[in-house]
Amino acid sequence: MTAGDRKRLAVGLLFISPWIAGFLLFLLYPMASSFYYSLCRYPVLKPPEFIGFGNYARIIHDEYFWKALGNTAFMFIELPLMVVLGLALALLLNQAVRGMPLFRTVFYLPAIVPVVASAMLWLWIFNPEYGLANVLLTKFNLPGLRWLVDPRTSKPSFIIMDLWAVGAGMIIYLAALQGVPEHLFEAAELDGAGAWQKLIHVILPSISPVVLFMVIMGMIGLFQYFTQAWIMTNPRGGPEYSTLFYALYLFQNGFEYFRMGYACAMAWILFVVILAATVIILKFSQRWVYYEESR
Amino acid sequence: MKSKTVRRRVITAVVYALLLGFGALFFLPFLWLVSTSLKADDAVFEFPPYWIPSRKEHIKVEGRLRGVYTMEAQGEQLKVVRLRDTPAGTHLRVLEPKSRAGEEMVVKNAQLAPVRHIFFRWENYPRALKTFPFLLYTGNTLYIAILVVIGTLLSASIVAYGFSRVQWPGRDIIFILVLATMMLPDQALVLPRFIMFRHMGWIGTFKPLIVPAFFGTAFDIFLLRQFFLTLPGELSDAARIDGCSELGILWRIIVPLSMPALATVALLTFIWAWLDFMGPLVYLNDESMYTLALGLAAFLGRHGADWSGLMAAGTVVIAPIIVIFFFAQRTFIRGIALTGMKG
Image 1: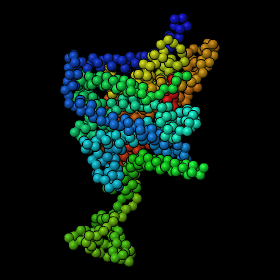
Image 2: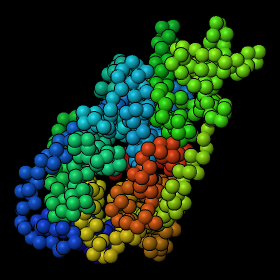
Image 3: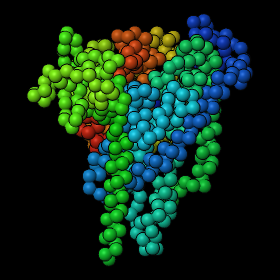
C-alpha cells in the first residue's frame, strides 16, 4: 500500500465513519444483544436471566407461533399478485395516449396514503353493514361478506387493501420499462416480432433484475406485516387468530406480554427465515433474471 | 394500410377502457372517504349509501319533527308529511300541490319516497380535529420529520461522498455491507433497540426517532452515492490541485451540483418520517408527544363508530401528502429513477 493509498483509505474511512458508528450502535449491537436476550428469560422489568435455548424450545411447541407463521405464509399469495398487477399496470401506463399524466397520478396516489389513514379508510370500506365493499357486491347481485370479521375472509381483505396500493411497485416497473434500450425494440422489430413476443423476449428479460429486487423487498415487507393488523383487527390478531401475523405476535410478546427473551428469539428466527428465503429466491432467480453484460 | 389504423384505434379504445376502469377502482376509496367525511350521522348509516352527502327533509308538525315524502296517488305527484302509523294505514297530510295542501288521508301500504336535500356537514371537520390535539400532533410530527431530514441530508451526503468520490481499498466491499443492511427487518430490531434506548433513558423522548438519522440510513446513502457517481471526476481533481480539502469539495462543488438528488432524499425522508407508525408507537408513551399517525390510531381506538369524524380526520392527514406529491412529482420520480440506476 502506497502512502497515497493509505491517505485515501484514511479519508474514505473518515467520511463513512458516521455510518460505521451507526452500524455498530444501532444495528450490530442490537443484533448481538438480542441474540443474548433470546437465550434469557427477560420480563423487561427484571434483569435478563440466562436459560440457554429454552425460548427456542418453547417456540417450537407454541401453537400461536405456528399459527402466526401460517398466516404470514398465506399472505405470500400477495407477492405474485403484486408483481403481475404492478407490471400489467405499468405496461398500461407506458402506452402513448393523451391524458396519461393524470392516469399515472390516480393509479399511484393510494401508494402515498399513510398506512394508519388507509387502515382507517379500509376498516370503513370493509364495514359489514354499511361499507363500500358490500355496496359494490350488492350492485352485482352478490351476497355481502363479513370481511375482516370473518376468519375466512380476513386475510383476503388485507390482500385487497394492499393491492389498492400496488402503485408503489408499479411506478418502479414503469421507470424500468422506460429504461429498456430502444435498440432492442428495433432489433426485435427487424426480426418481425409482435407485441407479445416483444414482451416475452425483450421487455421482461430487460426488467427482470428490477422484478427480482421487488420480489425480495416484497418478501421482507410481508414478514414485517404489522401496522394494518395492529390497527384494523379487534381483538388484535382476530378473528380466531386469523390475522395474527408474525411481526404482530413478536411485538405482542415483547411489549404486551413482556416476554422480551421470547420475542428476541422470534426475531432471530425471523432473521434466519428471511436470509434463507433470500438465498432461495436468488438461487432460483438465476433461471429467469437476465443481467446485461457489464460494460 | 387502412386495417392498421383501425387496429390502432381499437387498441387505443381498449387502453382507455382499461385506464378508466382501473382509475375508477383506485379512486373510488378516496371518493368514499371524502363523501363519508361530509355526511350527517343518519346518512352515514344508510344502505345502499348516497354518494353525495344529503339528508332527509323533516318539518315540525304538531310539535314534532316528521319526515317529508313524495308519493303518487291516482296519477298525481304529492308531497306529504307522515304524521303517524295506525293499523288502518299511514296517516299523511298533503303539502303540495298547493291546491290540496292541508288535506289529510290514511293510506295502506303507501309507496313513500323520502325527500332528500344535498347537505354537507362541514362541522365534522372541526369536531374531528377537536377530539385530539391536532395542532400539537402536527407540530410534533413536523419537529421530528424536519430534524430527521436535516440529519439524513448531513450524514447521508458525507457517507455517500466517502463511497463514491474517494478511491480507497475495500470501499466497494463495505458498500455491499451497507446494501445488505437494507434487508434487515426493522420489526426484529425494534426490541433490542428499545432495550438499549431504555438503558440510555431515551424512552418517552423524541431522541430514538431522530438521532439515528444523523448516522445515515442505507437507502439514502445508496441514492446519493448513485448520483455522486454520475458527476465527472475532473471536478474534484481540479479542486484538489487548487488545495481544496475533501470536505470543501463536498460542500462547495458536489452539494451545489446535487441539489436535485438532495431534494429527492429530503422529500422521501420527510414523507417516511411523516408516515412512520411503529417507531413512535414503541418509543413514545406520553400522549402529549404523539405524532399524527399515533393520534389518528388513538382516535380510531376511542371513537371507532364515529365514521364521519374519522374520515374527516383521515382526509386532513391524507390531503397534505397528496398536495406535496402534486407539487413535487418530478423530484419524486427522479428518486425512483436513481434507485433503478446501475452502480
